[in-house]
Image (cartoon, rainbow, N blue to C red; front, side):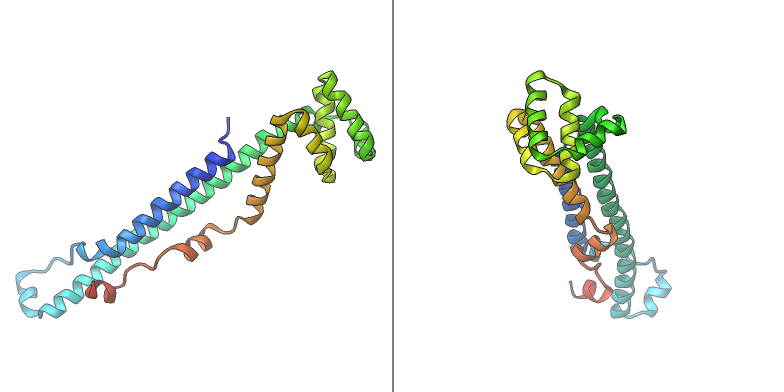
Length: 201
């Protein structure tokens, strides 16, 4: 069973927050990374300022490695989220429409051409008769034609159906808004610490 949309959102936020917190910590921790190993002779030939500058450049390079790894981790969080909500969408559509999607084209055409009142009457009769296949056909026709009023009637008759329709709408809206994970990371992540920042930390 796929994760619910709410659970997928929660897991995504948790993953994003973990990566962002580690990146903010990176700004403070970079100055504690070990610097280059110098022989006694090399150390003696350098001033303290030169040693600190060399250490800062080494720390900057290490921080950049960690930053790039966190970018990959963030993108994996986003890609996992997209896969999970797409899987949930498939699951919801199967629950809502099921075999109706494989119905004879002539039957599907009849439902597609039916008036709103006709669909409403068929729906009410199908619910009373517990005719799941007909209910699914009406739902499929409503989904294709954006017949929200009839879908709402079904939601009143079968509340769990309204919940699934609402979740499906949230998933569709989120999928439309999803951008490139790398672009999102660039927009929200702090800059990796530079050697100059490390020297003044």
